[in-house]
Each structure stands twice: as C-alpha cells, then as structure tokens.
Image (cartoon, rainbow, N blue to C red; front, side, top):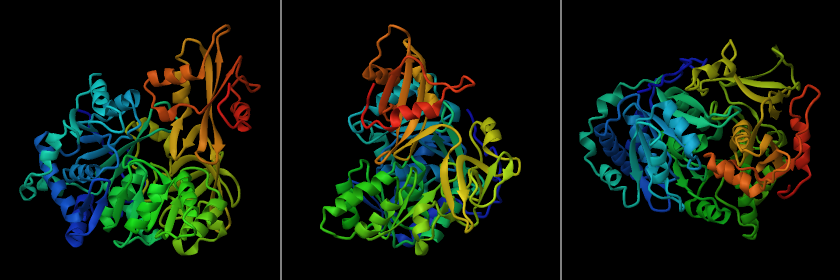
Length: 534
C-alpha cells in the first residue's frame, strides 16, 4: 500500500507546536462538556457526545484495519458524522482525505489511486444522487479500499460503530505516538494542471493556522460560525471542524446554500462569524435588505476565493452590521494575509490585507525582488504552509530554492505592507471560490471527435466571481450543440460544476504571432456577453 510522507519536512519553516489535533481535541471536550459543538439539520451535538462518538468510531476503524499513516478518504456532505469521522481518523494517527461531493469518476479514481486510500466513506444517497453506486464504479477500477456508508438503509455498520464503548478504545497508544510533524490532511485541489494536486498538511501546519486565525480574528469559545462551504474544502475543514475541536467554537452546518435560510440560522443560532466566497455575502445582504433593516448577530465576515469589491464590503457593514474584510490564501497556504478585525479601513476593503505574523510575503519578477507597488509573483512562507504535494515532482515548481511558496498569483505590496492581487500567472477559473483547471476541461473537450481544439477562459462575473467560457473549433461540416458538448464532458467523468457556462463555436481559435492560442482574444469574445451563446 502507498504510504504518504511530507515531501518537504517542515514546509520550509520551523515547526512551532509540539501539539497534535487529538490531544487538543480531547482537552477542548474536557473543558466544554455539554456545550454545543456541531449543529446540522438533524442534530445538535455537544462536545461530550462528539468525543464519545469519535472514540467509539476510532475503535471500529482500527478493527476494520485502519492503521497509523493510512489514508482514510470520504466524500460526505456537511453532516455531523463528517466531523466525527475526521477526529476519529486523526485519533489513530491516520491521514484524512476529504473529497468534494461534486467529484465524479475521473477525479475520484485519480485521488484514491494516488493516495493508496485504505478506507473510503460515502453517503448512501444525497440530494438524489447515488454516491454508493459511484463509489463502486470507481473501486471496480482496481482500487483496493474498504467501502463505508454513512446514513441510509446500508449505513447500519457505521451507526453501530458510533455506539461502542469509548472507554475501552484500543486506539490510545496509536494516537499517543503521533507527532506534530506527522501528516494530518491530504486535500486535492484543482489548479493549473490537468490532474488534481494532492496537498499535504501536518498537525503542526494546521494547528499553526488555527492559532493564527484565533489571534487575527479574536476567536474564542464564545464564537460560532455558519459553515456553508463543504467540510471537504479547506475552509470547511478549518472553520467547521478544526476551530471547534481546538478553540471550542460552535459550527452551524449547511449542506445546501440558501440566503434566506442562512440568515435565519444566523439569527436563531446567534452566529458571530463567517468565512466564504462573495456569493454568500451577496445573498445575505439581499436577504437582510428584505428584513426592514434588521441587523444580524454577525460580528465578522472574511471574504475570499474570488474578486471582492469594496462596495460589497461596505454594504455588508451597513446592512448586516458586521465587519467585512478580505482574506487571501489557498489550500496550500490557507490564510496568508488579512486585515486585523479592529483595523478594517478603506484599504482593508480594497486590498487583501497584510501578512498574518509570522507569515511573510514578497513580490518577485524575473527572479528579482520587487519594490513597493511593483507587480510580480506573490511568494510566501510561514508555519501554516503545506509540506509539499503527494506527487513530489510538483514541488520543484511550487517552491523556490530558498523555501518560499510560489503562489502562481500576481500582486503588489504597498508601502505599508498591504497586498493587492492583480491576476494569475497560469490559467484557472475560480467559480464560487472553487478552482477549475482550464487544461483539464480543454483536454476532455479535445477528446470529442468533432473538436479540433478548445480554449477555456475565466470571465469576471458579479455573482460567481468568474464564469467558465469555452471556445471550440470544430471540424469542417460538423455540427456541435452546446448541450451535446456539456454531456460529452460529463461522459468523460467531469463534475457538472466544471461545465462551462458559455460557449462559442468558431472556425478557428485566435492565435498570437508565435502561433499560440491568444487567450486574451478568446476572453474578449465573451466579456461583453451576458448569457450563453454560440
């Protein structure tokens, strides 16, 4: 079986903490007791219940063959069971691999095969989709992983595992051998390559992230967060699972976003903070305006993942009564910059903020460090930085020789140290905060028998952040319909969220003088369009 290890021992930065997640989680549960930890549509789970179920499930996982260093993957919604599974896996010193519910055969098979997953958990059925059938199709491709089912008629084994005797858990010795530098999380992110990149985080890197969030946001056990982002996304893991586990905050989970329901939950659960894409904030503001000026319990909303306007930030303060600010980070380096909660000025709304100490950033162009207000690649280092990719060959491009993470984003730093992101060095589309590799979509399109070549670009969109737009050149005499092209992509195993919103069918794609596809010219084909067209 494949065994994963940090491919850069300290992520280019010294380990600050000797703690591991299970140790901190048990301390939090001992102190919090009956306090509510996780809320979903079915249940209000206390910290004491979370601890008991986690311990019982850890014993069952060990009985099912999960060992220290194994990868346990799950493709689950925002349910309380997801949080229990997460902490149970880490109790064993195993590695958690959350996979987005939108992923389908192609992405899942790649992730499970590369990681050597030992155990794969899915919902029996969710939102009308048969995840069990999907999992079986993937595992039938020669992938050796034990399948577990959450909820539904076939989820009895998991439900029974939660009721075992937690005080006789055989996992204690295994958990005690876990070190801060051991891997905790493997998370796949769609980036600038066709295949997803497996990001590796240790206990030390993620605990450093949580502690920096607590400092910069002033988070305490009195706070609660509304979490509509998937618990299989880095934001969901951090704010929906790890913040409660380490800081004692409460996470209110949504498995389907609706602005009006979110607003009601904020009021009913007295939610104090949120982190999410601009679309969440836009919908909350629209709902609040219908409430005749009623203010929410929110004190803070950190907005990231896509283009964020200063007008949106100001509207949030006026309408919701909360501090709204921008944040910059990625799966590899979750929170690099933001503005301190007590110092959100106009500049804090129009920039990504300053580095969260001890994080550092620099701007580099053509190998040269750039002065203030000059544009170049954003490079960063700090204790929250990941420790490499599952495919260690990717590290050569991701890190500089002196240990800085190359973000691939373009930006500039002003004279006071505030960062502004100006673009990206490589082509991806960020829709609703999720990254889509344009090359992955292009390669799948070019497997269509009538398509000569394809170019996918991101075009700014006020609601989505960016919309994916595809221009395709087809063989002479062929007839290509947008619906047929979309179905072709789905047939190739791509998730529906990667299907372009707009299409242009052309005789030939525009090219530069050197013969390369002129992406800027392709983008211009769509920038003045409102709806899908051909």
